Image (cartoon, rainbow, N blue to C red):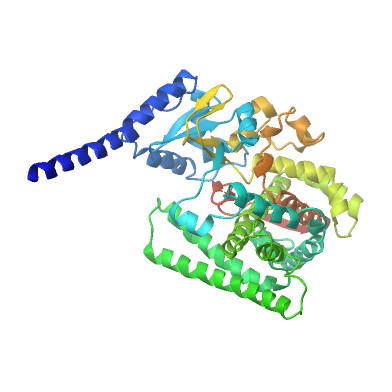
Length: 504
C-alpha cells in the first residue's frame, strides 16, 4: 500500500516538475531559437526570470527620477528599455515578462497586418486581478458578438446627428469653466486640473443627460478608484486589503446609483411619462437592454461596464490631449498666434459649431501634431489566438504582440530628422502626406475595426475648448512649470501644467 502511494506521489511530483521545466525553460528557450531563426532577436531569456520585471521597473524609475528640459524626445525617458532594445535589436524584437513571450513591433507593414486582421487571429490582452475588477470590461476589452453589439450602440451614440446635438452642451461647459478663469487673469493657472473638471462635466452630460449632476458624483467615485489602483501599481503591485475594501465599497455605490437612475427611467416609460429612456448614451444603452431581439440585447452588467469605460477612455483622453495642446501652444507662441488668427477670422467672438470647427485647418494641424508627440495610446496590446503567419514570421498561439505606437510616432525614418520637434506644418496636406502614405504610422486612437469609437467625440471636444480659450486668452509657460511626462492612465504631466494667463 505504502509503495503504491509513494509511486503515485513520485509520478505526480515528476509531472509537476516536468511542467515547471517546460514552462520556465524548454518553451522559452525553444521559442527564442525559433524567433532567432526568423531574424527576431532580443534580450536573452534567463530562467528563473522573476527579477526581469523588477529590472525593467527599476530602469523606468531611474529614468523618471527628475524633471527634464522641455523636450518632446520622451521615449528614452518613459520606455528606456524599449528605446535601448530597438537600437540594439532592430524594429521588432522579442522579450519576456516572466515566462510570457512578447513581440514588440514597430514595423509599419506588420502593424498594418495586425490591425487590419479580420480573421480573429488576435485578441485584446485583458487586464488581470485588481485592475480587471475595477477598470476592465466594456467595449475596449470585449471580443466577438459582444463587441459587435456594443460597438453598434456606441457608433449610434457618437456619430452623425447625435454627435452634432452634443455641441451646445460642450460649449456651455467650456463657458462655465472660463468664467472661473477670470480670477486667474494675469496669474498662474494649472490647466491639467482644470481640464479634469471640464472633461468630467462634458462626459457626465453625454452619458447621463438630465441626470448629469448625479452622474458627476458617480464619476467622482470612479476617480477615487483610479487613484487607489494607481497607488497599488506604484507600490510594486502589492495589495492593501484596506484600500481594496474602500474601492469595493465605492464601486458598489457607483453601481447602486447607476441602477437607481435606470429604474427611474424605466418607471417613467412604464407610467407613460416618457416614450424613451433618454437621448443620452445611457438611454441608448437602455434601449439595447430592452431590445426585443435577444441577439441585439445587452445586459445590465454590460451597461455598467460601458459607463465605466466611457469615463476611463473619454474623460482621461480628452483631459490629457487638451493639456498637452495648451502646453505646446504656450511654448510655441507663434503657432498660438496663427491658430488664434484663424479662429477669430472664422468665428469672431461667436461660439463654435460642428460646421465651423471642421473648417479650422490650423487648429486641426496643431491637434494632430499634439496627438503625434503625446498620444493618448502609447502602445496597443494583442495576443495571438492561434498559430499564425505574420508577414514572413511564424508566431505561436499565446504570444503577446506589443505595438509600440509612441516609438512609431517618433520614428525619424517616417517623420524625418525633426521628429522630436513640434511642427504642425507636417500635417498641412493631411495625415496621408505627413506619414508618406503610411497611415499606420499615426496611431493616436488605434486603427481599423478596433479604432477608438469616441475618436470624433474627443476631437470635437478638444477643438471646441481650444477655440474658446484662444478667443479670450493669450498664454505662456509659467516659470514654475516642470516638464515631467509620466505614464498613469495615459501620458500625464506628473506635476501638472502651469501657464500664465493673459486676457486679450
